[in-house]
Length: 188
Length: 239
Image 1 (cartoon, helix red, strand yellow):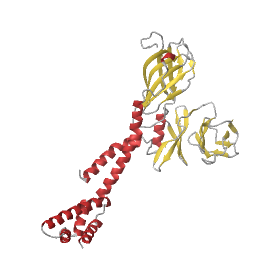
Image 2 (cartoon, each protein chain N blue to C red):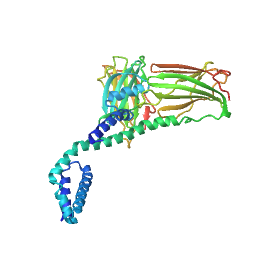
Image 3 (cartoon, each protein chain N blue to C red):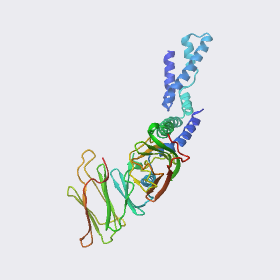
Image 4 (cartoon, chains in turn purple, red):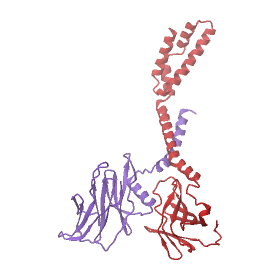
């Protein structure tokens, strides 16, 4: 077999091996593709993507699906690829509450997200255990997403979410909830 | 100095070969030619030194040969061959690691889940109930009720997209019986792999129940499986 034929043979082998090698690697070419596969694989969704936000490890994908809201993460891998993150599934929205929310933590990356069931809520404010206050006034449709970090991977700080408030345009509190204990889905 | 001439000739030819991994092969081939010609001239009555000198001289112009051989051993094709060889090898290893090994491991670990000793079994039912969640097929294969009052549900599941990776099954659903009892699931174990074999233990299952009900209702996915447990059922294999 001459070299030209050997190259053709190799290219044929690559064409056959590349798809299974790629798909079995758990890598995806786009964050949305990783997100969609992650949801389907865990038997959730397909959700409607409301907002996508970058963070150090990849992207947060804020979503609605029927009566649930979620904030999936997908992680960037080797610059060009994406893979499943965590906290794929959501929480059930309780329309009786002015604000329905969840917060969770994966390593040092924390996020609080939720939905505003009362359109008079114009500002969301969360207070962390170290006294830091984070606010959001520009919402994504009727959803919000606040993110922060609790130190670094090797030097974690206690920056749990302790309180959430929803204010109206007159700065009156329409919703308030205080938390204790560990966040949902925390992984070390 | 025939040896010097020969080395000079070879160096000059090889300098023009731009695909370095072919140089050794070309050198060996040229040396063979020179040796053959040297032997020929020796047979014609020349001494070793003259024969070797003539052999090199009659090989032709080194630069011309070098250019011709470089064309023949196309460096672009050479590098393409080398790179695709490496990639094919790496991909083959990846496919073996990621696909073939889990698949074989699933096939070979038929008894990967702990079996209950026959002496501890009160009854054993062969179930053959298949349900589907998105791309996942779940097959309930066996139900074993043991002396401790635990009901053991054996099941396996696999992803119909054999090339894909995904989350493991979060759970089989809520467990109840025909008497209206709801059960908390106990420990579960599984062997992973392409076809994951699992056992879900339901502690303190009612001995009098004659139907096991597995109900899955999560995020708009639903299934309901009813497995008859009555003694004397044709599927039963009482031990």
